[in-house]
Length: 138
Image 1: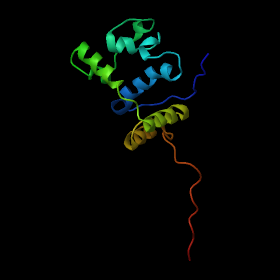
Image 2: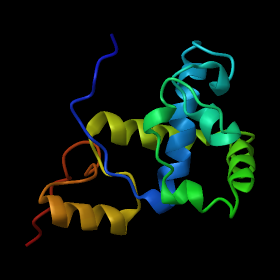
Image 3: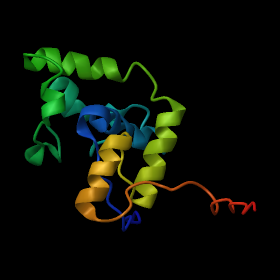
Image 4: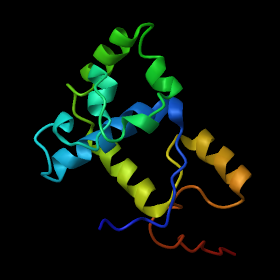
């Protein structure tokens, strides 16, 4: 049984949602469970790209970012398929993994500051190591 992370990640949907959808749908491919996201039965890829129903399609609700991909269902499905023709940049993969594993907010500096204000806790790393000591010059 997969281990569940105790952390939850707040996501800036406008910037990251479609990338995260690709990231999630490609996880079975990266793990060697399927050659293509369509081949994994619990993926929403077939639903989002072809309208096919499967074991998880009963509870799927398209997000506004997905709906904004096109005016018609066919346009949205085509646009979503096109997203998979380009690899997720390694820097974005690293950022997604770090935020998910550490419970940080996934978004730009302004978004993280908003989340910190609402949650009353840090939403991003403060960097590696301790701050440097300030020299006292007299």
